Length: 236
Image (cartoon, rainbow, N blue to C red):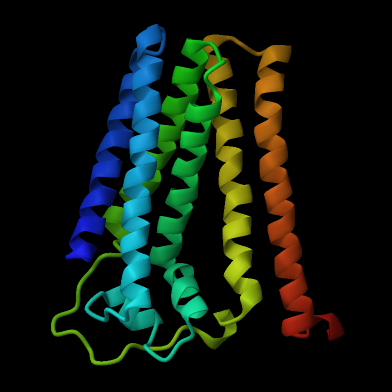
């Protein structure tokens, strides 16, 4: 049942993000719209968190009726690799990507209250547009909630190369860096539409740029360390 609830949460998040994107881009000059978009950003976060939690639960409890769990996990795996197996595949990694994306959107909603309302509306609508695009791609081409009937008794194993603590940490760090720059993109588009390309705009976008740059650097460093010491590429 949790799988169906997770799927429904992802569908609902897609609907809310699409509505928020259209509403914000059309009515961004109305001051009251910003408040609704902030609530929409928080709702998107809660729903995607619920969907991601449903996937994690299926992997941790070895629910092999979920096709994704049956193909990338088994009951003998250590707990840490059951969890990391969630994003050790295309479908699960898309959900992780969307999760970080809506976290960024909710972050703008929470910490951008001092922004001009029209600029805040445009930034949140662009973030919602990106979320809708990735959620739509995930749901229609890479659905992680497909069921198997009958369910296999045991699942396949996660790729042995991915069963390493370095790769447990590397993707979330790298994704946070990549996806964090979506906020910079949204600020840039919002500034172009509203005409607010000035020193104040640069001051607002700078913390997000530094945040994303820091996580991207950490992710690349972790991946380099893993490749050098674990795969032995340093001897090539």
